[in-house]
Structure formats: structure tokens, C-alpha cells
Amino acid sequence: MMYDHILVRYGELTLKGANRKMFVNKLRSNVKQALMPLQGYNVKANRDRMYIEVTKEADIEEMMRRISKVFGVKSISPVMKIDKDVETAKAQASDFAKTYAEGDSFKIDVKRSDKQFQYDTYQLQRILGGAVLENNPQVHVNVRQPDHIIKTEVRLDAIYIYDRVIDGAGGLPVGTGGKTLLMLSGGIDSPVAGMEIMRRGVTIEAIHFHSPPFTSEKAKEKVIELTRILAEHVGPIKLHIVPFTEVQKQINKVVYDRYTMTSTRRMMMRIADKVVHNIGADAIVNGENLGQVASQTLKSIYAINHVTTTPVLRPLLTLDKEDIVIKAKAYGTYETSIQPFEDCCTIFTPKNPVTEPDFKKVEKYEGVFDFSEMIDRAVNNVETIEITKDYQSQKDKDTETLMQDLF
Ligand code: ATP
Ligand code: MG
Image (cartoon, rainbow, N blue to C red):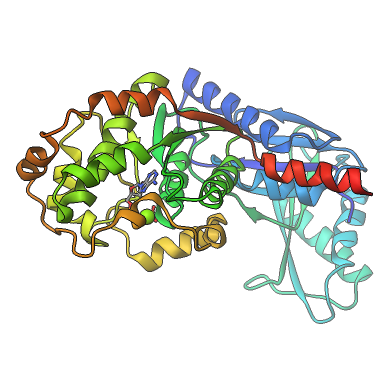
């Protein structure tokens, strides 16, 4: 089937006036961003919906796959825009039904915003339904539970006709809700936390704590790949990789074994807090989930949170693990997250971490050494990479060049 437009429906853009305009503009630029570097389209966004005109050569399925990931998009449909002429509409509706299987049912659904059009909704339904049946003896009408719905919208400028509606990612356009810093480990939870926060229109940069040689290049590559998947929803994301080895070693020197986990998290938080300030963000986001592991009891969250006054957002706080896994699969991060590369915390995790840490105790342990210089050094040596949805790691590029040189 050849289509000439993609219709994009907006999510909950209930805002009015100038705000609405800002939301629509942001959504349009995010959609354009998602379509880059594909060719053969022209995006037109108005107050209520977006029409993307596509050329015959355009890869419309790939375009729809990408647009469906853009937050703020409720649903999309590939459509034909046709003249306001009933014969053309009959031919087009019949054409759609050609692809329906033997025994399939359909119905015609008409919306008419042009009240001057020569036929009313009911008449059009009958006319188009009749034409479909005449040209496609294999199908029949079922208005209650049809296998296919041929939607026909009679608008002022043209008739739009389509029979597929694809779910979008929902939420709000990213870039309309301020900026946060996502603490991104290689685990299942934090990428999902990032998605959930972006879904509310919030921009993210990501921070990852890396402790070579205790954590490998592979672990870092994994976080880069997770960032790339996040970027499919928004365009480029900055990933700040913090050299954390020195701090971790020092923690292990001075902090009582059962408290090293708590202290590690507090140092991460102190560093994240500085980076938040440097990038002009207003909150930290993490993947913490109440009661999941030792470091995520209320007492523990309290002790960790104590080092900052910056809001710490925890979008997964109350979810069940299995629901987080479902989300991770839907967002496409799960397969990457479960790759077995050590993260900086698991390596230093004590056998028996305290589950109800007393923040006064951890402060006492940390107090024997002034961490501030080390923390500043970590912040100053952050490696920042801008990751696009098409990001290729240097290693992959090197392999590619090597292959090209060989053959
Ligand atoms: P995740 O699946 O996100 O790793 P988790 O259930 O394994 O979460 P923890 O390992 O206790 O939980 O980590 C809690 C949160 O702390 C993570 O969700 C993440 O936001 C942050 N975090 C942990 N390790 C790192 C790291 N190496 N770099 C950046 N953030 C981290
Ligand atoms: Mg983890």
C-alpha cells in the first residue's frame, strides 16, 4: 500500500495559548530529530495534529517506527490524502480492503468536520461500505468487532483516509519540562527511570561512575549503548563518565566494611550534585526502588540523601520489580541491561552490608578523611560524550576501518 502522509496525533497537550504553541514546536523539532537522517518528508504541525508528507521513495515503516518513540506522540497513522470527491474515496477504501484476508470483517468510520460536504456521515458510510463490498467479495461488514476499520475524515482541505492506528509513546514532548541528571548504572532500573522522567517532558543528561580496572571497558560500552537507546526517544544525550576508582579505594580504606555501600552511594550523590550544578539541571534522577536491596531501605535512602539538598527524583520508587522488567522490555533496554558486566558497586559490595544505616555513623567514618579534594578531582576529570541515536563507539569504528583496510 502506498501512503502519501503520516498523521501524528498529540498526547495530553491540553495546554492553551502560547504554551501550547511551545509544546507543538518542541514536538515538531523532536519528530524531525528522530527522522534524521532519513530523506523524503516534509513536516507540517498545526494546533491539533501533525501531517508528515512523504515521497514515494521514503521508508515510511522506518519513519513510523522512529516517530512512535517520540514522547508526546499519542498515535500515528499512515494516511492517503485524497480529493474531496466521492469516487476517489470509494476507490481508495476498496484499495485498502484488497489486502484483507478471506473472511475478515471491516467497518467504515466517517468523521466530517466539513459540514458543507455533499454527503453526511451516514450516507458516506453506506456509499464507501458498498464500494468495498462490491470490489472485495472476501470481506464482510461487522460494526461491533471489525478486524479492520477504514477511517475517513472529511476535512476542509481534503479527505484523509486510513486503516491503521499505531500507538505512540505518550507523555509530553521532551524539552518542555526542565533538565535533570540521571544516575545511569548498567542495571535494569536506571534506564527505565530515565525513560519515565523523559516521558514527562524532562530533558536528561546522564552520569555514570566507572572504576577501572575493577570495572571493564565492556561495562562502559554497555552504559553507552543504554544511553544510545534513551537517545532514540529524544535526540542526543550527554553522558558524563566519572572516574571513581580513587574515591572507592579511599572509602574502602576508611569506612567500616558494612557501611562502604552507604558511603559509596553518598560519594556518588556528592559528585552528582556538583555535576547538576555545572550543567544547570534542577534535579537528580535515579532508579531506586523501595525495599529492593540493602541500599534501598528508607533508612538507607535517608543516609544517602543527606548529602544533598537537590531534589532526588525516584520514578520507580514504588513499582514491583516485574513491572519494571516489563517496562524495560517495552522500552528496549532490557536485553542490554542483563548483559553480565560488573558495575562499580558490585565489586566493592561487602558481604554483609548494613540494611538500616545510621547516617551519623557513616558521617563519623567518612569524617576521618577529607573527601572534598578527591571529589573535585573526579568532577574535573569527567569524560563527557554526546551520544546520538546512531552513535557508534570508537571501538566499532576502528573495527570497521580495519575491515575496510583488509578487504
Ligand atoms: P539499577 O538496575 O539501576 O542498577 P539497582 O536495583 O541495581 O538499580 P542499585 O545498584 O542499588 O540498584 O543502584 C541504585 C541506583 O543508584 C541506580 O538505579 C542508579 O540510579 C544509581 N547507580 C548505581 N550504580 C551506579 C553507577 N555505577 N553509576 C551511576 N549511577 C549508579
Ligand atoms: Mg545496580
